[in-house]
Length: 425
Image 1 (spheres, helix red, strand yellow):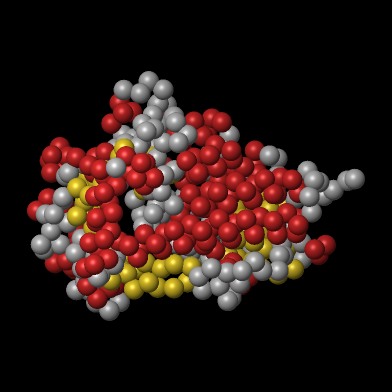
Image 2: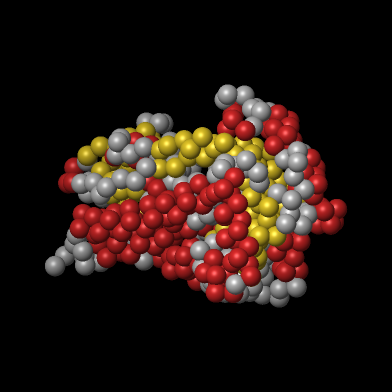
């Protein structure tokens, strides 16, 4: 039986949207991507993403082999441990990660956001359009769907995928009842170039991988390094001069607590870098001197803030030819580092569904309904797991925080418990 080739329109050139586009292009499915950013490097927020095994497998499935190899070779040095401390730098728990080779699919690897987008755009020049702000959609002839953009242009396809992030315009039109909740937690983040002086100053654990600090009175700090030391001796690393410019060695830290714990203006976004730095210094005033020096040494221009929000779970909706991916539906707090990986899981699943439709093996709405059910379950399971960490790390009660620290200390001494934690973090 003959069938019409599928035309997919993706709104948003983030990690999930570009991974999906790569997979569809590899399968020969017609796809176009529309991104509101004016250029590939404008408006990128944050310093790095952590790609875990789930994300790596999705990328390997969707990307051409050469592009995935390029991503693997240009990611930062894989982490070798995850370590928990209290605010006095007394060790609570250290988990060694078994996969240290950047070529291992199971390796936890930090990736520069600019590097990731640069590589995910490879081969998509004719597919991705920048400076296209999506404003709405409507029906088109023959059961198609039409996307509308702020500049007055339109695009027609068989299906629209909202991959446009936590503030998704597609979601607001498709599911106006879907809500996000402000958790009342604020994060202040900073970045330090990894100079010889900084290497000597920071705890060794931070150079080995993600380092989590349980502070007093509901405060929490996350630290991690991004390093390319091993590329200097890795003969397999490609000599990509353009990407080499993104290989900045640095340490990043993020300090979070309930909004009222910080001496910030009511509208936190209005605070300058200097005000944010002062607020972070005040909150860490009785912390270990090394952690305080990290904050004090950070330039105000490298300090930003964010409000912690989460999506509220939704039930499956009546499937149509508009769907969602990643943060556009299941946006989550950053306290487990799995948001991007959940989006990549979605991209790999949706790629399989669309490719089956394009081959005539499935009907579009049937395939989308199955994808949406699986995506909702997987995505909101990740949200719930992240919310547990958010609550645990920001608990203000002395008993609850003491219990958490005790559990970590016991796990640090008992190998089976430590291995159980290794599978969850």
